[in-house]
Image (tube, rainbow, N blue to C red; front, top):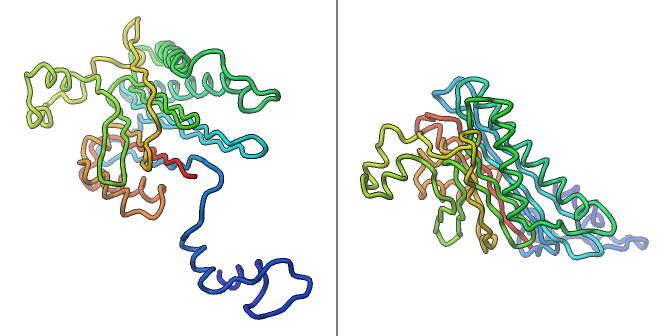
Length: 299
């Protein structure tokens, strides 16, 4: 690899080439590039990775995820754009996977259509609706699609729309969004719509009792359930010097926050961090399907 880089950037050290317009790289410079040391990111951009597993105790995967990241750099200042979704279907074989897949496809299609002229047309045009209005409309369309395509089933939904430095989150159910900071802090951004969480809020269960509650998977709110869907919609700044994480309960239900942080910190890349988390969840028994998305802002 070092030899290849030397040839690309000017041949062997000390070798003169009167037609060369670049200087050869020293061993120290090559090693610095390989390690990524002191290399500024001149284009602000999102980087993302995902991981998924059926788990150790389920025959079918009812989770679905989507990670869409876009960088458009040139004459105009770059504005990072990303859409990230985790959905955990319910209702048994086929129906759960149909519900979760329908939800992410409908939301992705709606959001991309709203931003088409902003991202891909000249002159660019901002969507008429606010980011929160776009997200809420897309989630409610997904709710109707689940009712039509997988009647009697449902799905959780946690979606994050990133535009510039802002993150707009749409959330129903008990999949979660987290902000993970390099200092060691893990902050849950979403609120679980589950029976156990409601009983804990009412004071009927303490944290230890909630962790061992036999009906932890019972939801009080889900896409595809009921006529009127109440969606949690909010906008926050992208975690500064941190990582945005979306995951299903197959991950957060078996991994403590310290294990999540360790899986991220011990990995050289986001891809490896996702696999670390999936592997750790499976080693903890893998009682459910596992999905995770990690996103960072660089530059």
